[in-house]
Image (tube, rainbow, N blue to C red; front, side, top):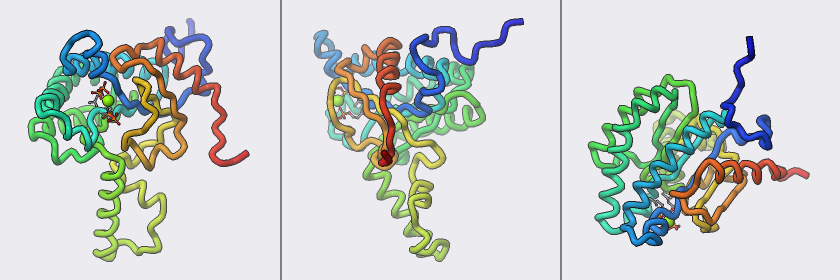
Length: 249
Ligand code: IPE
Ligand code: IPE
Ligand code: MG
């Protein structure tokens, strides 16, 4: 009897399995430009971007990466034209409803982070359902940052901590990094090892400010809808060349 391979047979031979990032975060940027270059409305880029995310999630799950976090909508993205914002909210809801079955089959655990209470009620219902249904799955931890802002997350954590101090449940001198991280939306999730940003912008746009302190950053000019398995492979090869020093020598 032959032993079952640990990861998918498609796993690239030139990657080291024991040097993969445990957690990849992605800033899925460039959907609008992708569409505009084709003379299409921006929303078509968002539509295509969903397919990219689906394939990336499947690939990460197959290759044994334990967590993927995707930036879907920032607290600043409300400043876009109403039509685009409404399209995105409807798209998130539609995709969640349609993909839940497949996520169950693929053993994905989905979680949303951000100020979820300000999202449309019907979207919140789909979010709650997807998180509840998949919570006992044991495959990849898939986190979607929606109405997420790193600064807002830290303020929210500070408020929650201050309330505990006021209620006498916590002393000021007990507040340390561990306490703060337990009050972030991402509590319990490991920090990203690798941040990938598509479409060339060299910034983090208010994404996971606390959590990203020691992430390796990879920026590619490829626009998000074109970010495929070969692009992930390139990012991982680049990551495996890095020497992560964490301030040491
Ligand atoms: C990223 O693509 C998706 C979201 C922010 C929702 P963009 O919509 O920012 O695309 P560009 O940057 O305008 O090309
Ligand atoms: C970051 O992309 C937010 C998401 C991908 C959801 P943006 O397109 O909003 O970022 P900026 O405006 O270029 O910094
Ligand atoms: Mg953008």
